Image (cartoon, rainbow, N blue to C red; front, side, top):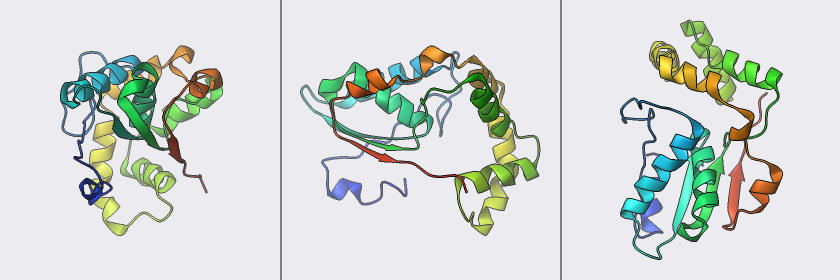
Length: 174
């Protein structure tokens, strides 16, 4: 919400969509990349007026869902703003590394995880370490990470078909 503060001043409205298993949404019965794209399409199509186009922002897995939405509904997307979107092709070794990064077992693991995400994590991040271990350790999150398949990744050819303008923000690991 902090990222979107003030955005309503430059647009007609701002909609925050919690994807299944994210934010305050319920835990989904099935959780995969395709389901995320479908969920975003259903949510946006339910509120967009005929012919209305949205500027779709997505971070990480939400970025992959935003890309899926833009590929499946190009007439509904005026622009994409993506922050470190998921979906880049990974080999088996890279996928194993991602799974290991998300396999938090202790507060120390959570501290290392947060340090990878934020160059200088603020002191109050210590307060969320235990809940982060719990959140990322949920069975449906871990099963999602182990169920990702090569066909879930975006190919350069597929990305080249994106119609709306794209703003891409990518963080670099130190």
